[in-house]
Length: 286
Image 1 (cartoon, rainbow, N blue to C red):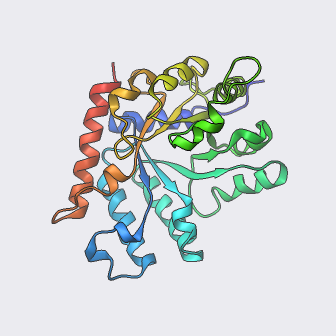
Image 2: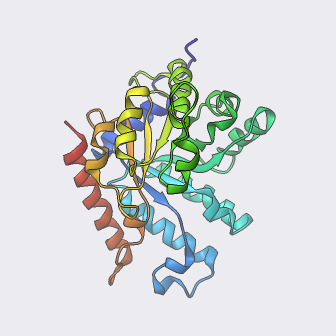
């Protein structure tokens, strides 16, 4: 059954429009860590410094980034003020034309998953949510039914994930491949006019060969690909996952938001985002 997401409301179609706006499939991770802020901001409280820093990041990267990925944990640790800040920043990013990804890695079923889906937009706009799919489609569909896109964990960039994701099943597939097949089957019911599904996949950019194989399993899934820059992956590592600049998001956090700040930290962040954007334009658009 094809679900009634339209071009106007379909998250994958909106993501394609956002990519076209900046001419590059760049996603910037917003992961505020007070100890790494520019020294001039460390005289403020963590909450106020986080607001100044994150607002500065969004202003700096908005001409170059199609999406902003907010790491929920970085804000939750600040308590109620942090949650409010997360909502304010998502509103600001949305106004600047970026798609909003809430990186919360939700994993539950039933009414709990429905509550998580409602919470995703309770304090600010949200287009996509990262989801742990290991409870099955019961943990994914509530987000889709709420009109959200889901980036489901398939092959993550952390090394310790190998112990689970590379385990071979009785039928010869790995655990990651079995999840990919599940997402492909589910995603066929949530295709947008762009041909991409609202059921997306998290595939680490550091897993180059596996990413290529997983793309064959999931031809209609948008990939969220962390690991560009600080984790060692390059644009050339992820080229095979794109279709004329669409279908995947190259995600960079530390390499863009914590460069060598120099005299002007906001200019340094803008320069880092622009450099990566130009690399992506050259490497992913045929």
